[in-house]
Length: 361
Image (cartoon, rainbow, N blue to C red; front, side):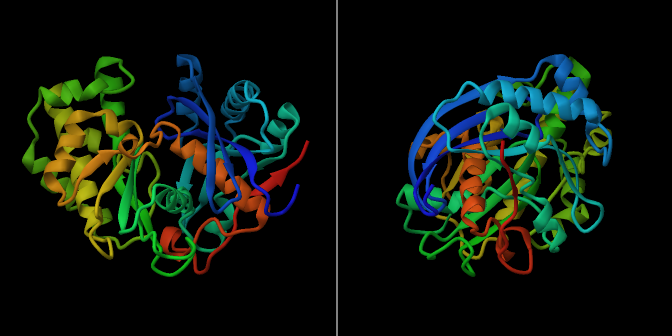
């Protein structure tokens, strides 16, 4: 393979919502996006999800959870043909940058043997070891997407997964690691507390269509108290573990189901509004990915509270379900080419750095 020739890369992502594994192929040279390929999804079974939930917060062990991650990824990725290499994120079970580090379970070497392809994995460790947050890592791909859609003014991409994260992008910069090209950080809780609430109280995986929140009333006092937490006064870059705001469930415990869901949804929206205040220049628009874009209550709160258009990323012809899987395909090619995958503006690492390691079959 030529060092700069475009490659068909297959990326996979298993996010903090623990719903399943997304997979997507893109044709890229690690700088430009030349084509989009097939996509796929494999949901976790209830039993698999329970094993993964039990592994959250564990810094060692969890071999049964790692086996679930490896088996499900191998099953899904084996359905694809024509890939030159694989980007494998694994499953984050613990994240404490500046403390114990970061841990993604799932062994890329095992996956390389199963698929017969080179696998790029362990994307976050080098960044954390160098003093970065190790997250978010999709911003370099967001920069390429902004160029791909022909953006000419600064804009933002917002991922509403278990945690919310925002990438502010200046598409006029030459490369994503250039000073001022990107600012990225976790905004705060997004779907995780809402998902955990409806799972605990109603036995559902999530608040489908925001239906429960739509029936409730936001508790203004709890919203105000949540937004006074120290996290919201920290300057970016900054990143969260999925369970860092788990105590919000205790705060809304006295509320009826609908009011609790509405309040947690309002906290997710207010977190984004606070985050946008950190942008160097107000974004011309915010394009939303992740499951939260399907929650009309959350999207309406954002539209009402932000001074720019807020649209699902499908509005510009992109796939909001597969964007993170595509991002790790893109990053895999950058690792293979020796290009940076994070920079001071995205993770707070002191200098642009390339993460990831490559396992070959």
